[in-house]
Length: 235
Image (cartoon, rainbow, N blue to C red; front, side, top):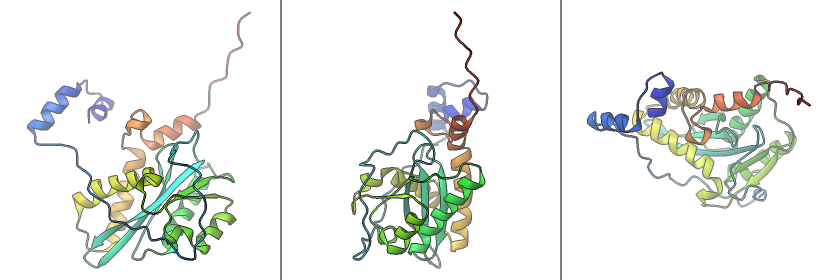
C-alpha cells in the first residue's frame, strides 16, 4: 500500500501507512488452503521436469507455468485455468469452464499463444510449458498440441506444490483476492467476469515486489523498450 500511495504522488512512510491501516481496521488478506485438483493419468505421456523448482527466466516467452483450480458456485463446480510467464509473472492465458477436461487447459494455452502474437511478441519454438502431472496436461491430445506448437513440455511430480510453486502462488492470490472476498458466485458466467476483471488488474495495475514494485505489463514494457544507442568511447 505504501508503494502504491507513493506512485500516486503521496509522500508517506511505511510506519504512517501501517498505523492508519490499523486504526481503520484494514489489513492484508490471508490465503487459505488449496484443494487438490491434480489427478495423474494412467495412460498419459509424462515429460520430465525441466525446471527443478527454478521459476525464473531471462526474458519473456521462455518459461510458462500452468495450473487450474476449482470455484464453487450455486449451480455447481467451476474450474479456472491459468498460464503464467515466469519472467514477468504476467498471466498470459486464462479460461473458466464447468468441467476440468483437457479442453480447459488447451483453451488457456491457445489464448496465451494468440495474445502474445496479437501484441507483437510471438512465441518462438522451445518455450518450456511447465505444469503438474494432472491428467489434463499429460493427455495424448494436449501433449500432441504442445508438439504441434513446437513447445517443450515439463511436468512436475504429483501432489508436490513446490514443483509448480509459481502457478500455485498465482492461484492462491486469485482465490484470496477474488473468490474469498467477492464470493459466493451464482454461475460460471459470474466467475468468468470476475476472472477477467482480476486478470486485467493483476497484469496492468497490481504492484509486485519481485518486479521492483512494477506491474507485469510495466516490467515487460521495460524489457521490450528500445535501448538508447551507445556512444563511442572517447579516446
